[in-house]
Amino acid sequence: MTAYLSSGRVNISLLRDDARRLLLDCLDKCPGTKALFWDEKLSGPFGLIAEYVLLQEHEVTKMFQLRTKSFPTVDAQNIVFIVRPKLALMDVIADYILKVESTRGPKKEFHIFFVPRKNELCLEKLAKRGVCTNVVEYTVELFPVDSDILSMELETSFKECYIDNDFTSMHYVAKALMTIQAVYGIIPNIYGKGKCAKHVFDIMTRMRRELSGNDPQITPQIDCLLLLDRAVDLVSVLATQLTYEGLLDENFGINNNTIELPPEKFSKANEGGLQEMPTEPKRLLLNSAEELFAELRDKNFNAVGPALSQKAKFLSAQFDERHGAKTIDAIKQFVEKLPHMQAAKKSLATHTAMAELVKEITDSEMFLNSLQTEQEFMNGLETDKVNTHIEDCIAKEEPLIKVLRLICLQSLTNNGLKQKQLDYYKREIIQTYGYQHCLTLNNLEKAELLKVQGARSYSVIRKTLRLTVDDVNEQFPSDISYVHSGYAPLSVRLAQFLTQPGWRAIPDVLNILPGPTVEGVQKIPMGLRKRRGSGSSIQSSAEEQKVTLVFFLGGCTFAEISALRFLSQQDDAAMEYLVATTKLLNGNTFLENLQEVLKFPA
Image (cartoon, rainbow, N blue to C red):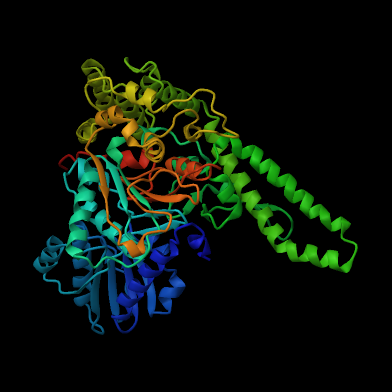
């Protein structure tokens, strides 16, 4: 079921196995039957570690989402809360425990598993409410998403760092990197860009010093670590993703490899041969274990239709082979292939339906107008004045997130907006969407997504790193810019330049980009060094691709991952990329986390 996790150069299933073993050990320390209450933000990620069937083997009888004023009755001997250390959740837990203790019945044991660390403020809150529980630290930081993707599922880390000035999540990142090195060996070369990258590097350095020589005795499997602060490249997260997987996420949301789609495209025949229209959303699992999805996910959406058509012809030819099967051996061979062919046919029908759903959106006038506006901004066109399409969106009361996304993109690609222009946009938003959104606008300014015009740096970066490319071949791309049909994610260009020719070739760009530049070497004991050498250089090796772990601090998009995969798959690629991130996101979910609605007194 999860064999795909071990199919990459670095075996991700090792981390999954460690996290699973630790979870089961924690559960087994609570003897008797157990009911689990999940932090809503954790139930999905934990599905990537342990299935419900496995938990049942360890006496888990029921599972619930932890919700305010929701007090389901359970007959388990143990009630286990698995939560992030958030103060708001402590009141919910206390309310439930006090409710249970006020009712007659067998005595129950209460346990809180804090993920990944307990928090003294949370414990104080519980103590003030007069609640006593067993506290466990369940130290899992990373959730395995795919054979080349790890996510910490910390969706608010960017907001915490840049709005709240709380860098706790960067401490968790440093701990996660120490876990990675414990499993896969010390990473010899570390590079980074941005304030958060420097935080993580400094904490890691201190943690390794505290190990005082007790480093893992493992030959390094990862050659280089690249720490990228999301604040260094905000354009790429706001630009509409144009890969298949990216568009699915933009429009329907992919959470923990699962997507929910409108049911109308997924009708099925009943016994009488009539088409039955389902009423429930279609829920699908998306990962590289599925052959067709692995083939389609990183393609520009304009290349998906031809790929599906080619697959349909290939399958049709395979099914036609039955007519030529005259001998017993030939028939036997065909029958053996039949289950795989039928599964492929079902997969083809599913992805054809999904592509149709996406196409309905991408063919709409609003989508095309918004995309054209984005492309103009990223190419430095029409950025210096109030944009008519943005005005139209506000007049039509399009979703606020869509409007903010375009305004922020204009601000970023214009090095800020003229004061008069910025004031106009803010006034229009307040008058149309309400005064309660003034805190959101304030957050966007704090994060420098919106700002008054400063030095013209974007055009220098765009030209030096060739961020915009004309005449992109979307069917057979030759450059990473295909993921946005003409715009190359700055984050991935930095990874590309680091490998060849090296960051020393772009000092001006590094000076312009926000935050410090990080570079460090971790010494590897002579006996653990790879024979091909693991010095401080990460330049190409003719013998074998090296591996770089790109860690996005503040989240990354599926389009950025597709661009990194594209670099890994080139015939002359010197580097293979592994991705870790605080959260997989898109422009909408990124901005939603910065939203803060002002609540008026009742």
